[in-house]
Length: 515
Image (cartoon, rainbow, N blue to C red):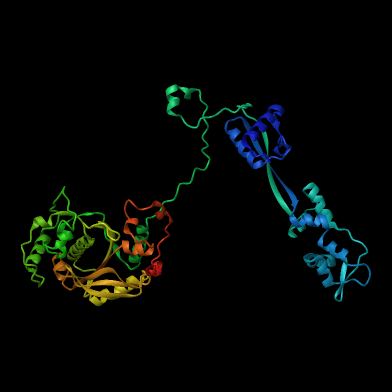
């Protein structure tokens, strides 16, 4: 079969030059007398047509051909005829088992056909002839189809097709004629205007390849979500399923007032030192916080104010509260949302419970190693309602983490400046075969809630955890720098599967502790 493009182009052009038209490409032969590969020819015709050297139209035809089994029947005879020939003449006949030994599978197929045609009959356990002679019409029909690629009787064709002896084939050939730019020599066409063409002026006389605007372009690679974003979306779905509202967390720069002071975190706390927090240089300060709220928080820090607390007994400074920083936790947003909830309650005269969550970046001035970065994601949730207790927090944590596939949860008392009581959350890791800390939780202190303006009987339970640790566990990543930063491999982002947290978190690392 001819497949060489240049040979096919030459064959088409020289044939057209000699005969003006190619009536049917099925009649074209190579110099060796071989049939043409019509699919390869189509590619050549499209190329020549784009240059307006030729024009062509398709000729579609259908024909019948013998299947592999049909070829065997055409040569050896039909199954029914072979069964007839295997039975000796006379009343003695032959045992059915003997026929099967002689003809194999053909005996089962041919026996029924031969009986139906009236050629043989059953005589006990034997088969005997009932006709002195037969005409093997099936073989004759197949030989006719093989010779003419069709048959005059449509019913016969359909019957043979049902027996899988023939197959219907489709073939496309082409009628080819000269185009307006016909020539024996193919001019090389430029695909783009180059700088050299513009400088030399060659573009004025150059022949350019036409654009095929109907051609399908190269499919672009689909976008891929980073593993963190996959796990983040799964957490968001859990929160939404449980009726939470997402907090706006698009402002990374925050004032010390909302990040620390509103949370009843003293101004001399070590977390507010430069070695733990990224402070901004320009602008370095702000006074954009409610003045009335600021006065309440100042008094609460200094002597407890109306909260029943003694405060921290120090002189609170507005300039320290005004320092701008990169937020160290998303609780800065939570305090702002609770203040807005309190203002809404005052305006409407009725308190309505609220459930908020956020998943976004926070920043800490920490040394970077295999498990720590200066920038990471925090998942935080708060529930605000009347008369909530520590039991409500524990019960909710149990439900929340079960939705993540963590069914073994336990708590340990701890200290947080703005929650009391406070608890660390642990989950049993089936891969590492030990209890692993997964988050922190607690109840916001009255010293935080009352200055914000919430009613005295309103309690707020809250919890937080990192996004990176569940992601590293889910995707079996041991070094956080392989998950975030300049060392991340793009192939990793493309290849990692979607995240499903309803599967046991930690099963991905089964056996890791034994390596």
